[in-house]
Structure formats: structure tokens, C-alpha cells
Amino acid sequence: MRKTDWSPGQYLKFEDERTRPANDLLSAVPNHDVKFAVDLGCGPGNSTELLVKRYPHAEIVGIDSSADMTAKAKERLPACEFAVADIDMWQPQKTFDLLYANAVMQWLPDHGRLFSRLMGFLNTGGSLAIQMPDNLQEATHVAMREVAADQRWAARMTQADATRSEIGTASFYYQLLRPHYQHVDIWLTIYHHPLQGLDGIIEWFNGSALRPYLSPLNSDERADFLDKYRQRLAQSYEPMDDGVVLLPFPRIFIVATR
Image: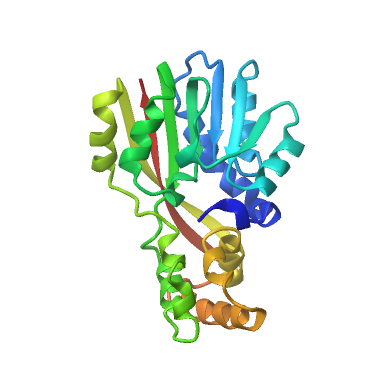
């Protein structure tokens, strides 16, 4: 799925929660002298802002496939350069000290080819830093696929399940990257986000994973889809006494340095 149909406002409703893994990723990047950095899949600029704060004297570029996202990022960081581009076809005119990709590579196929290609855009000593949600087998996403199989709209959902790429194992990424990088660091973190009930979970994914399922439907069908989705969520997530549901959210992190 491209971000061309994403809503920056919806995405930023959970800005603090979405920015935390971006910050955790950046904190693991070696503190080398970064003069040129690019935020791959910059979204509305919340991750780019972290780069600006850590490397205040660097030239920082943000790219995203969504014009709405880059416009929002430019409003937030007018001193930075932003461009609309697809990462898998991006051809920069210079090399960089940091390629930073927070929560975007899961939308792109063929990581073996893509990650190897990105290496050619790094200077010696530079780092490729990637964070991806690894939640396709979580109850939230299993429920999406189950509801999508309903015969009323299944024919229109053929592309929705294919929008996310399967995430490889830590071993896959290590073996892919280690021959080309001096150091490769890979780890998995499971965040637990406190949300307001089942509706909080739906609100969270309305800004991302639910969009390819909802976009082919009319308003009545969307309401029916979400009602069935809520029923399935209730089988896996039980609100606590105060109504809060903890949403487990696993993410894989990769920092490879040339």
C-alpha cells in the first residue's frame, strides 16, 4: 500500500506512540558524523524532526509516496527538503551518511533486492536504520483478514491482504546484510499501547492497516465491516476495569553500518 490514501491527521492522533519506536531506532544509530541524511517514508515529519534534533547541522531530506504527507512535513519543518517519491524506485543524486526508514519497509516487497540496493546510497561508515511492525500474525490483523473474507466484499479485498510484505526473520536480515556491513544489530521490541477500549484499537489502525480494507467499501459496508471487526477483537482483547486495552505491538529493528 502506498501512503497516497493516508490521512496525516488520523496518523498523528497517536503521534507520541508512533514516534517512540522512531526515537528508539535513532538512539541505536552509531554517533558518527552525519552530514547528509534521508528519512525514507517520512510521513508527516514526526520522524524527520528527530533527525533534525540529533543532527542540527546536517542536510536532511525526507521522501514519501504521499503528497499530503510531505506537505504536512514541510509545514512542520520548513527548513528541510521533502519530495514525493517511491522508495523502491528512488534514485538520489548523492550518497548519505544515514538512511533512516521508520515503519515504511513493511509496505514494500522484495527486501533482499531493496535493502541491497540501498547500500549503494551509503557512504563508508554510514548506517542503514530500519524499523518495521511485525504484527501480521497478531489478533488485530488476523481479524482483518477474517472479516475481509465475508462473501459480501471478498472479491473487492483481493489486493488488501497483499499490501503488507511478509517480514523476514532476524536471521534472514542478518545473513542478507552482514556480508556488506561492518556491524549489523537486529532486535525485536514488543510495545504495549494503552488504548481506550476496542474502539481505541480501531482508531489506531484507521490511520494505517485498516485503510486498504475499508477503501473499496461504501459507508454502510464500512460500518458493517468495522462492527464485525469489533466483534472479533472482543474475542482477543478484554478491557480492564477502567476500560483501557493494552495493545501488544511487536516491531523489528535493524541498524547496519558500513
